[in-house]
Length: 426
Image (cartoon, rainbow, N blue to C red; front, side, top):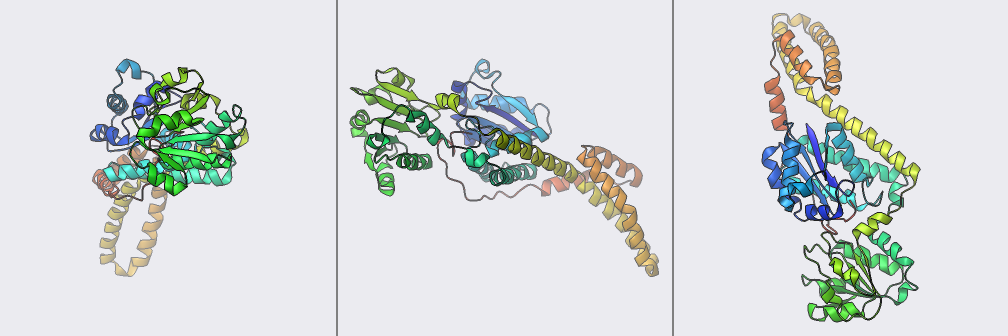
């Protein structure tokens, strides 16, 4: 059984998501892996999801408790913050997530890379299975197909661009703005590009990890040190934060002595900015929760077309998965029958051609029917029928096929992570 436990901006309050996102997949996966056959954890600013393969009906509770324990939330705080999806619905959900249909901003593109990164991380940890591999690979294929076939991907806007759009109406002239950028990940690079599109030239970067000078040189912007951070902050007109810090990087003390209007855009989760900053005179704070409330709906037709593509892809994946479940039994049956055939040919070599044709004809209908039954979720009936009619116990073949299907613990090049695991919108 494939199963997904998901907590997202659609099911959980913002402060709960903030705590759930903090541990990351590397801390949550080891808590889940011993209880399941395989697990891939997808952790973004606006969702935490565990996709697992398991034989137990109680696994969802184990996963939910692991997510809660890793975050430090109490059972009462976590109650009602997640949903569970199984098999075809789990696949459909993942495909929709990868396409950006479940994001804060419908159609945003960053989540696709994050889904690929989640699979890469699981490979490195050795926690994938063949079905999880296929499901995540089909999710990426579906995301690319939707991007090419609909207006959804073209219409989707990144978090940075949406945040700046929400600031547009409050600024007379972007070209005169002095911006302090706090963070040096790829999301910071996207921020610089979006600011320059608006004519901003005065950008200074600060990095708590000491990468500011190198980053500033790469992108042709100034950098500041911790010693000069307060001075730079109060001189700025806009502060944009996009770091992975678990503690606020902007506090009331950071802008102490401020005597003019200041826009603070917080793209981090956990929050990069102490909420108390928004209470200071002259400060306008725009955080992820505010951005989410203002996120526009995408074109209805593009969204509907994308969702139909997701449903179709999930149905094909589910049918294929069910069909494959009968393959070991079909192989075992054919091996049994062809063993009998070879023995008969040994006794009657002159009839070889006729015997082979007869056996092929006789096996055709059972093979097709077995695959059909498996796609209907009735593979156990196929196994029982073969055992009853031919005396062939197919269970060892099924178990051997499942063991052989475990993917190798190798990885593809990891995608770069913007904010908190590659994106802040997923």
